[in-house]
Each structure stands twice: as structure tokens, then as C-alpha cells.
Amino acid sequence: MPSDSEVNRPPARLSQRWQWGSKQPISFLMEQAVRNPQVISLAAGLVDQATLPVAEVQSACAALLADETAARQALQYGTTTGAERLKGHLLRHLSELECSTIGGLGVSLDQLILTTGSQQLLSLVAEVLFDPGDIVLVAAPTYFAFLGVLNGVGARTIPVAADAEGICLASLDSALESIAWAGELSRVKLIYVVSWFENPTGISLSAERRQAVVDIARRWSRDQRIFVLEDAAYRELNYDGPELPSVWSFDVDRDTVILAQTFSKSFSPGLRVGFGIVPHDLVGPICDRKGNEDFGSACFNQHLLATVFEKGLYAEHVRILCAAYRAKRDAMLAAAEKYFASLPGVQWVHPGGGLYVWMTLPAHLPTSFESALFHQAVHVEKVMYVPGEVCYAGPGESRPRNQMRLSFGTQTPAGIEEGMRRLACAVSHVGRAP
Image (cartoon, rainbow, N blue to C red):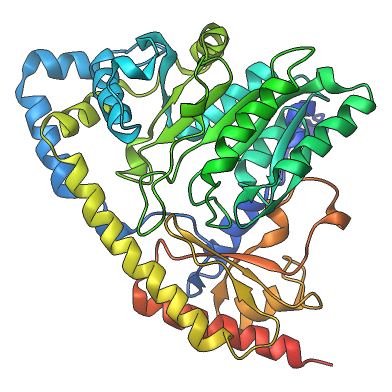
């Protein structure tokens, strides 16, 4: 029983930023997963448990700890920008991805910042760029966890129409023109794009639009620079998609595009190693903010990943990983064809990589957390998905209500098929309801 002092104690007074960033959909999804452990999750954006690199990490860890001097360096505090040993490997890795030489990248070592996954870089960029009311433009739909980050700093997020080639250029130009006419162009700070196999749609930004996005950002940078944040989290999970240049590669002056990548999807999320290539103007501000938060991301993990590269363990792991995910992707697409093709008005994207299949239902079938479909799926059929509306910025009433994100990352091919069968049963049941 609470004491008198506890009963009379005043409530905590939390910040406005906490209120802006609270009640994110990821929290609800995790809560549902815990409460319904028997549910097949086609919602979790986690990686394949069976393909996590246990042997590679054991080998690298043994090699790292066998050298006492190197081990002590790895177990010590690092620097805010990250271990130069790993940075060297990452510049070589990036040069291979960019089909370039290290010198041809046109960046200095200080522009490469190591972070705790790419999510930390997204958060740091938001922190240093946005005051409440500043504007960011994003594709509709887009990565919903970043929408939560933007809400948390009080940014205004403007959705821009997208299609099978990614964010629509005419719509992006039109949005900026409308903002300029309203006298608010000075509030625009950022254009955000997920360039490869986007979370949630699985769509990649076309080669032609990559150059154009940079050009549009430069053309509208009248009152201040408008940056482009290229989220390349799924870049290396390419199964049969096209080989595309990065958006960053079109920023020849290296002053407009922020490139964010991570090893959470291609190697191990438990290591939490990501990195960013940032324009010179942002190096100091991002490092100042990062220094206030952590003095630098986990030093041991960075040295461990450097050892993985030195021992030649990374590339083969990515090859094996992509083969496993390709089979899972194919299982989900085959199950979609098997169980959904006969349902009127159902469509889905065939992704060339990544972890997600984006499905659209008939307009009269909402998929939201409060919908009859979500209840039928989770509580009756025992399968879970991510409602598509959480992936849209802007007012709730303007968001499409009939879409869902399906993940094939964590389930086995058999689990994927069974989950899709259950989901189709839920859709059929709700669709038949009077």
C-alpha cells in the first residue's frame, strides 16, 4: 500500500520532446508480440536468426583477443567519430560498392562517422538540423521509425507521392513550390529517401531519379542548404534487383547528400555498427551532439568488425545471407500468388531485395490497429502485420488505410507460407462480413 508521501507526491513533468515522440507504433507492435507469442509475425523487421554470423564472430573475436595490445585498445574508450582502424576498411568497402578508388570517393576520413547502427545517425541528423516547425520532405510511404524521430524533434514532415520508381520528382518540386509560395522555404532542411529496397515498400529509387533528387535539393537551396539524407540500410541485400549508383555519388561537391549505412542488416544487428558520410559543414555539429550522448559508439564492436574485414569473412557472409533471404522472399511471393491472387483487388510489390513485401487491399478493407482485419488476423488467425498507414506522414485522415507491410526476415519459408495462408483467411473473412 502506498505511503502518504507517495500518494501526495506530484507527478513527473516530462519534456515537450518526449510528448512529441511518445506512443510510436513500434511500441504497440512489440507489445502485441509479447502478449501473443503464438502469433506468426510477418511484422517484425528483424534479421534471420539462423544466418547470424556466429562462427565469423567467434573467429574474429579470438583473433582480436589473442593480440593483447589490440585487445586492450578495443576494450578502452574510443573516439566520438569512431576507430580509424575500421574507418580504413569502410572506405575500401565503400569504394568497392561505388565502383571507385578510395581517392575517387572525394572524402576525408573525418567525414566518415561511426554510429550505433544507422538509426543513431538518423537521430543525430534530426537533432542538429531541426528546430520545432522546420520541414522535411519524405516519400509516401516511408520508414516509420524515422517518422517517429522527426516527431520527437518537432519537425513538420511533408509526404510526397511515390510510385514504382520511388519518390515522384514532379510531386517533390510541387511540394517545394507550395512551401515557397507560403513563405516557408527557409524552414525546409531535408529531403529523406530510402534508396534501395525501401522499408516498407521494397521499391528502389530509379537511377534517373537519384540524380534528379540531388538537383532539386540544390535548386531549391535558396535561403539555406537543403540536405538529402540517403538511407542505404538495405543496399547490400540485393537478390535480383538492378545495380544502381548511390544518390550520394551524384553529389560531386560532397556538400548536399548525407549517406547512412549499417551492418545491422548485412552482418549483425547485435554489434550495432553503422556509419555515415556527411558534408564537412555537418561533421562538427554531429560530433558535438554525439559526444554529448555517448563519447563514441562501442569501441570493441568496431574493432571486432575491423577484424572481420581483415580476415576476409564479410563478403562471403553477405553472399550466404542474400541466398537465404532470396529463398524467403520467393516463398512469400509464391504464397501471395497462391493465397491472395484469387482475392479481388489485392496487389503486392515484387521486391528485388530488402526484407519486405508491400501489399494493398481493396479500399473498403482498412488494415489499422483498430480495424476488424487486424483483430481477426492477430486474435483469431494468429498472424501479425504492420498496418501501412503508420508508414505515412501527414494528417491521419489523409493516409491510405488499406495497405500492409509484410516482412519475410524472421520466419522460415514454411512459416512464411503458413503466415500468408492465415493472413489470406483473415482478409477473406473480413471481406465477406456484411
